[in-house]
Image (cartoon, rainbow, N blue to C red):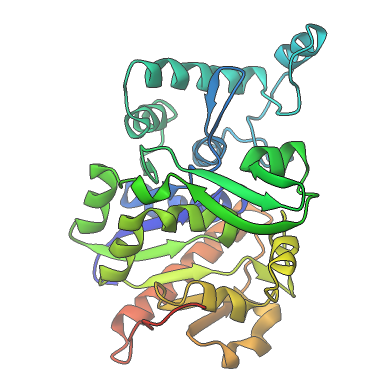
Length: 325
């Protein structure tokens, strides 16, 4: 890699783990672009689940057992809400609630989500740049056998039980990348773009659905490396494997490679899946991708960056430019 700056595309829990590893190595040279397709209004508050997970994880404020929310959380608000008959299917902890209230207040004043996230990151002591994928509303809608469901209704309230028929991103066509996001791609010294091992269909695709995002990725000269969320034919966490089966997509690393084919230069897969490497339609690195500790996250991040450096210096590097099908 000729530069130091790295951009990571990230969803929630799984992606945030790798983002934390990258942050340990890069500090202020990291920009994390986060999915906002999960955002929704609940109890009169604007909730940004993936953005908050990334902020809490980078600031070491996250709950490591649940994977979401803040450590040391209490639940007095939810208990009181249940007493008065309020909706309790989406859990808001007392510490977490403060961020939702402040974000809602500032959005109602007309401030951008990008500005709010920037300010919160600095107050949390995060030196990396954390950017929402857009300041315009994009909402993930899951078409199921029970009808169309906004993402949180499918993921949390329905616990991913309904069969998925299709996934769409309402508002994406009209959404714009923020000036700060465009600047991140244009700055000198951009060494790599990393697609974290978030759910490709629910967490990364909303980012790619913003038209400028795909254009920026296709135009960049920096190598684009994706980390597969599949290990041994299944996702480590979440509904990725279930959704792939319901969309008639095999849960393989080859499927992930084809899904990202138009924008990536390489794919990182787990050591246990090394036999698949030769058949992948893109350059690959085989290494340990399961992240159970901070050391695991840092080790994987280092391997990903080394792989990007190799790709950048390869004279044979030619990004595929055909449909992922």
